[in-house]
Image (cartoon, rainbow over all chains, first blue to last red; front, side, top):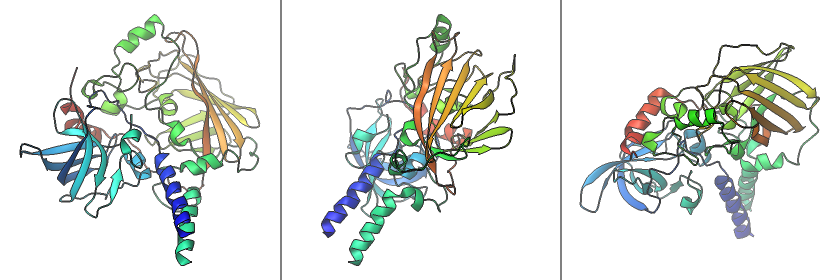
Length: 136
Length: 266
């Protein structure tokens, strides 16, 4: 009984998260929609602002070079509906970031999911699989 | 048993978010379940009354832009200078010249209701209807004192609006005098100074109304078209505190420096 009720609860929660609007002020032209990167990094800044919030973090690439990444999500209003907040990150947090990079090789991208120091995960576009619900 | 009670309470809170969030500050809007519920679980509408906070939820967000009527030659020429971020003519992020998203010019009217109809509050006075929008934290004043629209108005970002009750549940607003610099949407649809917009707010029941917006601009489009067609709006709890959603030039410059300007140009 407990399991069944919990299932109903989780389904309801999932549907609510999934139903939040997807919006971005631009399309996908700059992004390489065929690529998917997961980087382990250290947060340097979290900007809670319009038109997009963005997370900055230092991460080492395969050549051993540390680069400062800037990855965007939607605006504060949409992200609030997805459970994000102005205080979701602080400088120094260790995070695992799954992102879609831009085409030109710059350390820029769209954040899909991020795993926080406590092991919890935030999704930029709803519940997993996040990519299907990313803002267009 | 206690756990089951807790789970049921949590589920109920999620399914009735309008009530559960009503006491909070900074609401981003209603959950989809509350919007769905307003279709059926409601009472008859009050007469000649749109007061309250209204939320279109996801259907209010038209980020990709609109499928408009075909452009005239003038419209095509005007649109050719617009480099939108969405729609069939979308350009790379660094090339976008949308005045709203790149420099925070006002969205203007009717883009404010065509593009992001976030929650808004309607206030009625004896001779005006005021609409207070979450998006941009803007407002419009709609004259209901029987005044005529201006004949040769100086253009304004949000135009000049008059409204009347067509019947007890249908409020119709006519707007003219919009500034040609504003876009209609994210897809770079232009308009001329001859644009006339009609909004029809139909109160379906106590908790729901529908908005239809007609775009009539013979200089830009070959025929009138609907920017919104019976878009459903749900009444939010009266004590909802709506978040700010403001385009700040400081913030948009920071975003461009960190993201847009570092991406590809064509």
